[in-house]
Length: 192
Image 1 (cartoon, rainbow, N blue to C red):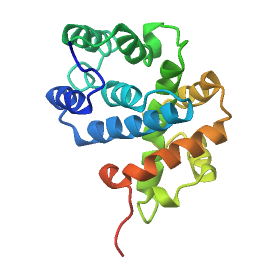
Image 2: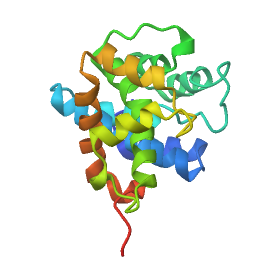
Image 3: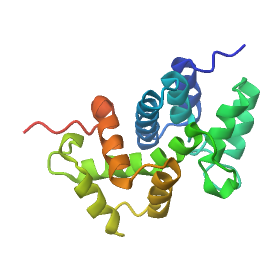
Image 4: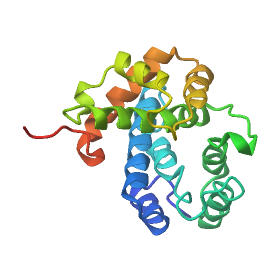
């Protein structure tokens, strides 16, 4: 039986399908945010971390709405991942039309776009440091439609709403959750 909470196994699967360093960093960022939310909600950080790590594992090879998460779900099932993990990962893509009811599903959706956005905000700071990012700077950049165009702002707002957390609180939580992994995300700052 698959030890589906095993991060090393999840990493092997992620690396099998993903080579793009930015997609890998995104996976690590979402994993960190998911682990933090699991701790906050008294859930299993290992399980939630694996869900965050694998949520886009199929995206590089299967990026279209007809494939992304659909092909991934098939692969996850074949490997023996439990259905609630497959469902959580599948439900993070709004176009699948799956209802997010469990806190894990809501947290994944809420952390996905925002983790990437917060990372982008850190990278445009002169210091390139998450330690210089605050809620105000993230909200200001959210209003700038030219900044990080690929981030769906509506999903950022909807994610916080579905999670039942005020947007400012959610942004602060994600910023704090990324600080411990800042070095691996290359947002720990530059030497002057």
